[in-house]
Amino acid sequence: MLAFVMYGLCLSGLLQGALFPKFTQTGTAYTGVSTFLNTIGPETNLDTAKALIWAFIAGFSERFIPNILDRLVAQAEKPKGG
Image (cartoon, rainbow, N blue to C red; front, side, top):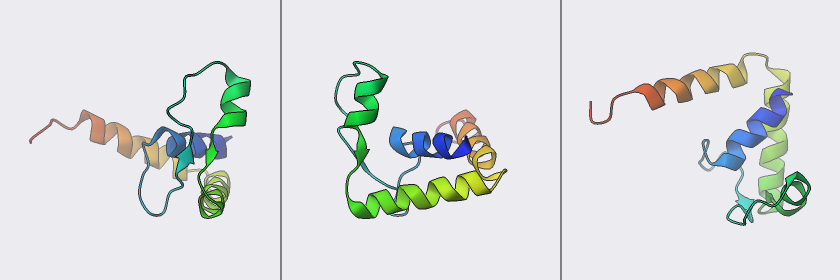
């Protein structure tokens, strides 16, 4: 289950950088879950490999995703410019 959360974090752009996968078709209009799952995917074979590695890590480590979520929340709550 946490592997899907990790995939969503990468897909949403909340986690970005050279270590995380990039996706295609993210700017298209949402028309349903089926279309979403069939349209959006990793940009390259390398991005597919990154997604699989991160999904494995997230699924294997019970605390990995909750730690990332805690850091994202703390970063969002931090006052701007301070």
